[in-house]
Length: 207
Image (cartoon, helix red, strand yellow):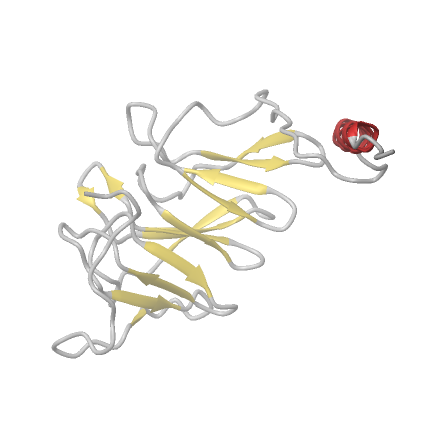
């Protein structure tokens, strides 16, 4: 007599259901020690005033927030320690003019703030903040790139390189700043046309 295939089909279905059940259980109960994607709110006590168009940089142990606007341009900021979930205010004495869209870099010991938009419009001024001393030092503007905002800045390990932005049109110019000498800026190589540079541009989403 020929055997019915139905029992075999039922067995396969039961096996499939069992695998699905195990998979669902593993998803609901991950193995111990597996990190889960979660958000933890930061403390607001002692935080800087609400704002937008500010900048932030990571020091390796803390986040430093500076500048921006709450309807008026700001030159205040704060230092957030995620381990302690606490804020510390930054001294505003000697800080750069209140502004939005500044570029910031962390040198390993200090924060350099440069450019952005202040009450006079685009600016090419900046300052250096020492979190250990809670103090600011002005930067030289000799040879600095043209005033701009929505530019980018990076730290090489010894110097800051600024490039691009809006001044008041897309630009592909930049400059190199050495905070140890503060004798002025070194311009990124420029020949007519700007040799090897990419097309002028500013921050993502701009126009």
